[in-house]
Image 1: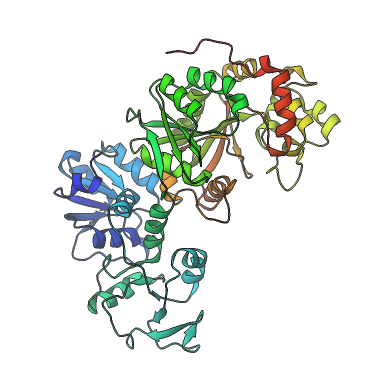
Image 2: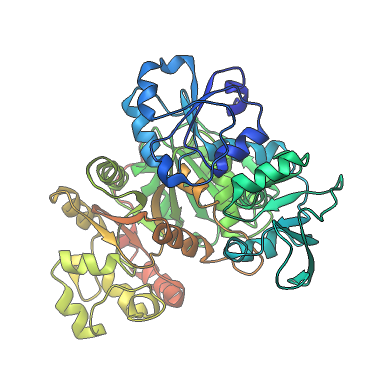
Length: 509
């Protein structure tokens, strides 16, 4: 795949949006900037524009999309994308997002390790956790003025910038909202963005992009450069594969790329299955779910829509199409920005409530397990997570209306179009999200402290803190075998009730 920079380095470039990423990209890359456009300059704050014209986006109406390339640096990337698409600009061909260039930079360059931070105020504390984990080599702090509260901060010396002696090995992270003024001071003193200074936000993105995909791996690559990628995380629940994978083979649209990922091992049975199915297979030495998920997405650069599925999810006919339809509808016809879309899952802290309501089963549930409430599965109303009997109930034990997941899927597919917004932490056994959201949330976090559940917590937090909705596609249904506390009992239930889970139709070739 030809890099974005190689495709645009000789083109006229327009920056859509001004601010931190815009300023840092100009420092990191040699770009032929024609002009800037920004529709929200009054809310942007400090910007570094150099001697380049600034217009509203209406100015782009005068341009032929083939004659230039637009880099979106707008905080509201979705807005900028919609504006450009309405004018005939197409993503990748005529425009990209600033994160796309940063993403490339992280894999083609190595920034020097920062040793100085400019700023000790609110911006520093906002990024404190990342500073501690990503930048342990910080030696000192500088401030615009003489320090008012002593000469030491966090056990490191503090000096005013006027007192600071510039050294060849200096690399300064600007950790302040006053990037324009500080940037000007740095440049006057001979500092160059990207060479020996940069904004803290940009550096954190670059550091995470590089660290969160750093793993040894093997891949049998059968990519077709599809825009949709299904990532199946597998390798540890072989009991259910004979029902799960034929369903996936039958119901994943033929024009999708599929990769089965095994974390921390090579599984020859899955590898052979992927050969037979025409899917890609990849494995890592390190067993870390978030790392494996990041790596899968990295290895398929053409994929714009990402489908993450756990190995104990039983898909039904049409669920992929219904989820995609819901995603498209939300984007085109509502005032929401999409974080991710999920089907109705039976053993799930949100989906179980909706399925019980849709099938008139609320009273039966409450007579056996108490009051019905949406739950994150951990803090309250945890029967759906902890009780094997609750999982069996959601698979039809004592409630036959839920006993045939395929019939249930057919009924929901034929029901009027419907979606709901999930307002609580969601168990992400099967979700659809965008590559751009993955980049915006700095991938899934990889640390030695947390493995299982870190991907879920991160994307739910991202959605909440960045006003992205978690959408339940109510015309799509899939089954989930069990949560951890239910697993042993549900394995026996699976063996004794295999027909309930088995794929009942032919696998298309």
